[in-house]
Image 1: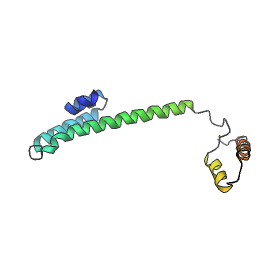
Image 2: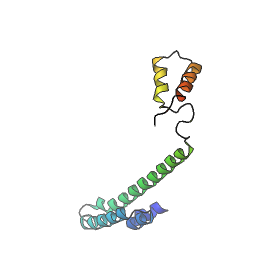
Image 3: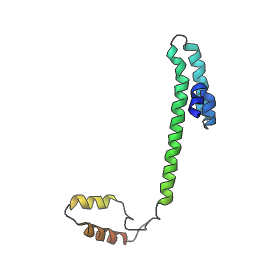
Image 4: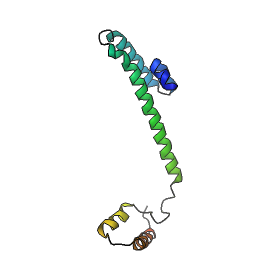
Amino acid sequence: MIYILTVLLPPLGLLLNGQPFSAILSVILIVFCLIFGWFFPVLFLVPSIHGVVAMHMKREDRKHRDIVEAIERQRPAAGVGPLAYPSFFSASLLVVMPGLSSSALRKSMTALSRRPSFT
């Protein structure tokens, strides 16, 4: 529904989405396109396209921010668990020693997790 409003009235749709600077830019685009749109009719679509793209980008940004916050809430405290050190080390063990069994890898990661941290 908000996208339909943004196509028909881009500044209002952007304001309702919490984007005042994009709404101001949209008003400027509308004025520009009303002047030059009579010579190049495709310019009449520019403010609506700008509004839809700006709204989509803002909503995707909110979605990504929510996902990152959810991941950060689920992350264990620093230094807890066998993967307290960067995971590139375990991957490098697999590359350097491809015949290494999973139990040997688990033992080495457990030994690494017991090392004192310097942070």
